[in-house]
Image (cartoon, rainbow, N blue to C red; front, side, top):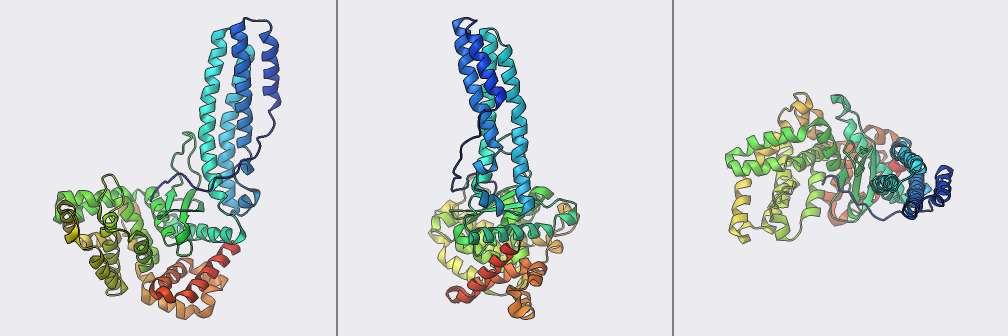
Length: 453
């Protein structure tokens, strides 16, 4: 999911700093001048001066990061990440200060009702600008403030690190910068991202970091993190549009309407393919466990929804596994999926649409990973990120090679963090109810990774 804008819980605000001296002086001047002018002008001046003083103080309050998140939460951030967020907040304040100062000067010079009214309209405009900046600051402050407690802060720092490493594997090789990542925790079913480089609620502000929401239930199985960084990578490289064309071509044997539908879902399919290339079957298993809901939710095709219906999404993931790894646990997953969601039970129109979309899925799996793309400088995604490195067999070989040190060694954490992520989540997927040891080892690894940073 992309660019969701409302984290929780809310940060607890603190008092804004005292009113700046220049605004207080303007307020005094307005009161003195009021005694020498008509009642309408005087009344407008006093009200406008007080309103301006309020919003000037609010501007200065925006300059205090601890008005939006606790000092401990800010301190838990990696240095460059915290600097990027605080710098963006400071730039926003620096854009507002000249406006409030100019209004204070204009009010001091105003002598007529019309001139004071012009200042008042300017104050209303600044009020709107401040609210926009505050919305941005609240978003990031709320996200930072989810890092309550040392354990949760360490887990989220580990997510930051894994997300950055997942993009470092691709973006620098294609001449693109790797954005900092702010992971935060929230309720809900799915992860989401507010991408770095997109325009925020304040039109003058560009998102300085990629803010990735991780759901509570997936924090210790965070392959969805890589789906979200896939959105960032596809956005920066312009792959979504190109993949849409490739999917349309691959799906055309199913009919133009089928091809059009698959092309509309390119944005989410790109992110699924990216997560698969990095974490293999573990990404599909985690996705399955989240989107396996009531039959209507799984099979409904929503107009305007960028996500493929869950029914098709799981089948596409299984096809990617089969294309790269041959037979495996994804075959049983697909068998159970088809049994759990029989199309015969659906309304005719929905049943026919899904049935016509299924036969082209193997072609789509190959188009996602094996087809060359100009976004990747003429190479396929699989040449940049080889899914074979995260096959169950390769991950088992990694586990044998690393031995007990795989989850405790700084060397392995630096050398293979994403394959350890894939292995840890694969073990959770395969062991099921008997995964207590695997879960404990993987959680301890995540905690150590976050504390190391």
